[in-house]
Image 1 (spheres, rainbow, N blue to C red):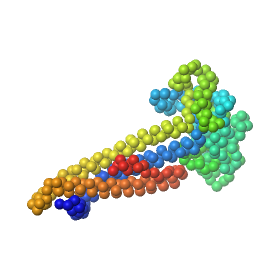
Image 2 (image 1 turned 30 degrees about the vertical axis):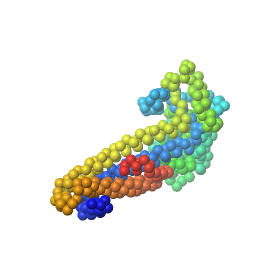
Image 3 (image 1 turned 45 degrees about the vertical axis):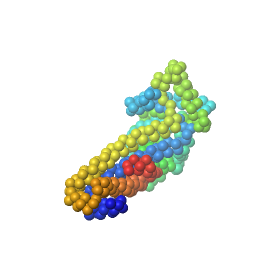
Image 4 (image 1 turned 135 degrees about the horizontal axis):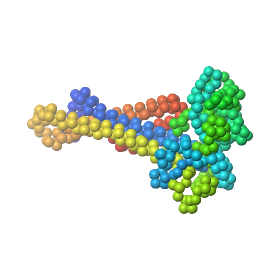
Length: 388
């Protein structure tokens, strides 16, 4: 029997048994589609997060409280307790600013409270900052003005509102000059921030920004910071500046650490590149985990096709006997069953690829609109090759 005849017969057999063929392919369709969908969404999330971190500038350095484990990265238990760690102070920021390699730096504290204006009441995240934050983050008030240095020094009760909070509290009313209440303290609204949307799964338009000193003393009753962001004069000196910052903080914190053991510090210093690498690793692990779960459907689908082909041999004993009677060899019959199996997997793979790609594209559009973010649609070639 010629090879092309075997192919023709295989297609005829599958067409005659449409329902059985469709159900057999279903496992492959779901498996291939799931793997492509998971890896596509994982790649999209990874590109989004890394892109947002990189947009902050490759010369940015982040300082957080808590020790650093050089073997295991940033300790999870420390990360969960950072809100209560009190090792970073405003004096640390002033000491860091004196370094000639520093362009500018700003401290940050944050908390959660209710914000009230007349009959409108919204749950907010308030962030205490200094004027440098607007420049480093390249984000300013679109209406009104930013917080200035004098207001930080005097612990002024002023606030700039995120775009969404301004809409929720004031609706159509102009918020500039109005007074809102946060934790029973009145704040004058001096600005409304530019619309920014979601970044790293945080909606910056729902934040309220106040002077860092006001946040510390009036709202939180603390003297420590949650983080410090530093911008180097250029990206070429980032590594040098990171080491200089460590030396500075060890001095201000009275830490004797001549060997430079990071685990002995009560702070951690991380560059934008390290933050990007860390997020890439985290999202990569998550994507691989989800894809491995989805790949189980591929195994199930493959086993399903094997079972159906095995059952087909028993069901089609008369057909096999008839073909052998007219001269078909065992090899010809084996080729026909293999061609049917390969055809089922190829058709299932193609349909799964189209389905997974279409769903991924639709989800990227929905996420972009709902979350107001630029969720890029990507199909990693590796996911297609792996699933097939």
